[in-house]
Length: 144
Image 1 (cartoon, helix red, strand yellow):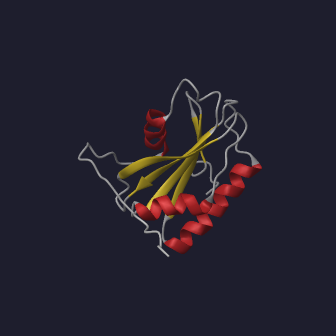
Image 2 (image 1 turned 60 degrees about the horizontal axis):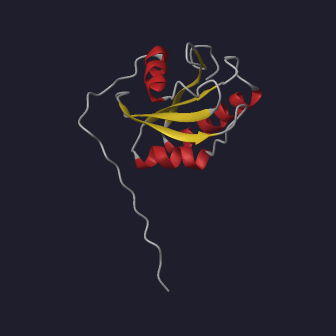
């Protein structure tokens, strides 16, 4: 019987390092990673991975869904964060409807990921809901 071997890898290019100082910085970084042609048609969930100095390690596209939702699996969110040795994360998703108001589901997944991160010493700094023109920050609005 042969046992499968698990491989973990991390790559860091020598590009200019971006630092997140506020939600506007996060929004700019996220918008660069989004396909503007489908941002109003298909919901996606992405993670910004940060080191201790809030320098961006990368943006990870976690899931794509339909026009009214996408699946977020906490185990997968934190498996990516752990593989990248991230100290903190910022989660995000778009609302194809262009309505920036968080749903109850948005609030529940934020709380769930915040709690899970505390066990792993990975801070959830913010949750952004974005459109091509604007964003809503859970942190800026006292929902963290």
